[in-house]
Structure formats: C-alpha cells, structure tokens
Length: 346
Image (cartoon, rainbow, N blue to C red; front, side):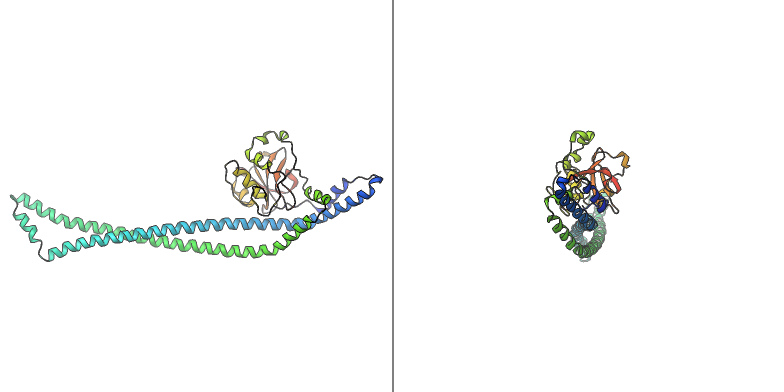
C-alpha cells in the first residue's frame, strides 16, 4: 500500500543534510545532492498517485470479496431451491398415491362392495362385535381422508417453500449482477490509474543504486531491527510473523507469501497464527476493536490516511512494520511517520 511522505522538500532537506561538506568530497557531494533532489522530486510527484493506485487496489479487493460472498449466497439459495423443489415433488407424489387409495375406497363403495362390510358385521356373534367391525371399517376411510388432508397441507407448504426459495435465488442473482456491474465500473476507473502505476514502476526501476537507497529510506524505515529492544513485541505471534518478512518486496494487491502490499502483510501475518482477519485495509480497521493510540499493543493494526488507505502493524517501542509502496521493501518505521486515522485489535 502506498504511504504518502510528509513532503518532497522535507525529504530533500533531510537527504541533503546527510551529504559531506568536505572540499575533497565536493564532486561526490554534488552527485549525491543531485540524486537527493531527484529522489525528493520523484517522491513529491508520485506519492499521491501511488496512494491513489493502492487505494483503488484496496477497493478492487473489497469488491472481489463482496462478489465472492454474493456468489456463495447465490449457490446456497440455488441449492436450497433445488431441495425445496425435490421436497415439493415428493410431497405431490405422496398426495397422488394417497388420493388413489381414497378414490379406490370411494369407487368400491359406489360399486356396492360395501356389502362385504355388512356381511362381515352380520356374521358377528354379538351386536358389540358387529358395531366394532362397522366402526373399524368406517375408521379406515376416515383415516385415509385425514392422511390425505395432512399430505395435501404438506404439499402446499412445500410449494410455498419452493416459491420462497425461487424468489431468494432471483434476489441473490440480482445482487450478484449489480455487484458485477460495479466491479466492471471499478475496473474501468482503475485502468486510468494502471498507466500511472506503470510509470511509477518505470521511474523507480530506473533509479541509480544511490537514488534507490534514498527512495527506500523515504519513510525513515529500516529492514534491520533489534528484536530484543522491542520487549513485549517478541511475544506477539503476528508481529513475529510480519518481522520474518522484513526486506520482502512490495506488490500491488499482493498477499504473500513472498510479496506483499500493506493489508496483504497484515492478512498473511495473522494467518500464521491461525487467525482470519478481513482482506482490505478499511475492513481490517473496521473489523477489529478500536484502541487509543497511547494504549497500542504489539500486533495491533494501525490505519493511516483519509479513508484508511494504508495499514501497518504496531510492534512496540513506537514502531510499526509495514509494506509501503513500490520499490520499498517491508520495513519498520516510526508509528507517527504517517497520519493515523484508526486502530484495530484482534
């Protein structure tokens, strides 16, 4: 994720202050001063663009997550609709079968077969047995009718569930289609930034070794850190995971394990301790528990810039580890090296 520097002039002044003023080193001073100015100018020119590109990448990732959730919902509703359809068909078959039995009894009585019922009753040895037989024979018909009514009600319920499931599928499909249109528009907007992203990469790749060193130090960061100085920071599994990636290259939208953007480094680090957190910088800050900056603990995520377009992980001792921008490896930088706009604890 891109991180905007305080200003090209400030960076230039800082860089120029590091140049030796010894007469014997005048030529080297001139070269280094020129390199400092060039890099400071590059920082001033591309920092805003780099942040916008990174923010758009975060937006795209968020949209992809929402699309994935919407498609999962479509699949779930489609499965439920199929189950409801199967249940409705099975209920209808049971109703048809029971209706056939009831119709058979009715037809039998219409044909006069009920005389057998009478003969059976008359053959009884006593009136009580005759009444019992007639009642039993009548109960058969009543039971069949009750079962038919119950099955018919179940069939109506099944058809109702199928109708509701079909409607849910339609709604889910509509949501997915709407998100797909939004993603298409988002990609169109991103296309206009892709050229600028490529320009940034080309300019950074063209830097001399001296200029590249200055570019990598634009946030006051370092890839070398004394873990013993962090104290309690060494007890955070997420921090330890993130620090193993010091020096790893930055990649737009990358989530590891060898290349990262800002939120990708947070996501990967927490995954190493078996914990799942949201994918984007905005969602990572929104999904955790906010804590006062003065109460930050190692492993807490810190959001930067308006709209939380960048995140880093607090490691203790007033420092954060983060993946900042193209051409700058994963580094440890001061907590307040960028404007803080949110915090989250998981």
